Image (cartoon, rainbow, N blue to C red):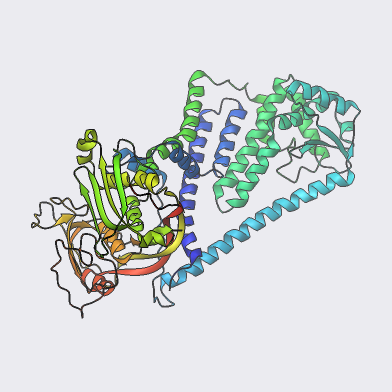
Length: 620
């Protein structure tokens, strides 16, 4: 059973969502500690911290990391990640794509067989919660909207309107707030976001003195000045998407609490006596039934008893001192700039074997290159590095692109037919001043030198995409692995070469048709070799991180591609004399029988190289 594209999408989404929830939760915890340290300061500061924690749920750090990757120039990474870099990555993104693959031939009782059903069930549960949350908010909003539109009348004159206009000027509200007189017993509140309106219940003014009326309207104007309805609507979206996370509901309560406290503080700063303001809130509660919707900014929200106590007895909030200002600035800079810097460190690194568009800095370019159509008429293909550059004969451009970008044949998309049939003889050289630098380059850096050559002489223009393609996953077979772990200090016989053909170090292998001998070899390197052998992406999903000594023998497919390092038909080289048993096992059977591993067919996200434009070169 091969997973469909929905399973591949699920496999990619689950780890990303888990990382996002972890990062957002951690962000909210940090915000909680900051608000605790600011408990004696103005409520508006704590409100902004809670609002930032809410908005973080809508902004994955991966977007900022991606931005950092686009801002930085790519560079070649010659060594493994630094300790600090690895710690940051592991801590910030602890969840990787560990969703178990669907096992071909699994019976109905196996967990792998039940995975698609579990995926569908979880998706349905989330969707039901999402729709239910939106429906509840929508129903409540419709009730208030209907009540307002049914009995509300716009009023342009009166003591309430005069107080509203005066307080608008004091608060700096530029757009006049619409005053609606409602026949319903809703509490006074601000309704709407784009054009807010103050909904004022008819008859409440008879129960209030001028001082009470002034205090209540000042409270509502503060809501408009702070755009509290917009912030409440944004958090409603967070609650709808992440309804299953208790933290978002707790954040909603904190937002409402600090929102009302901030307005209370502002009303008192305007000179309203605390006892008059407290009386106005209590009189409003006596008259009204309370606002039924969180997106309406009223006057009786949050913990009313605690608010009254704070209004009457709490000392004046302190302004932020220099130390706390620096703390908030540093925290904000780390939250906004940290992921971007991390992306600049992470994304532009060119890892060996990964397709990359563009060239790395400090890599010499070819000064001259001769490209001519091959006229040998043979099947022999040769590609080799030279002390001054590289040389190729009877090579197809498609093969050259594979070499330049470190990809396989199935990862090239949009190639014209002549890309694999037209053959060329190529001789490229660097300048004499770059010869010494050329000797110090790794094989991957030499590979990158081909990319600008292809762009210049073949007018090659490409871009990368991620598509769902058939892939092979290397997993542990039933019965466990049959691998011998390499020991430190092992010495290997002459003739073994490392994966890059250098020789003399761990991770070495000897390849002949139908035979692979590896010593001190990580399974990631084995997956790369199998990718080149089979012409399909092989991903190491064994979970084995050691280095192993192994021998693999199989009957090579005479119609398939040759092992890297093994001679192609008609090409002489080391290992050409190897003999194979035509009755031996296939490579798939050999991997399972001899290594205790298994190749499974799946569909998964694979980065492909899309050919946008390419031309045949002119002779020179």
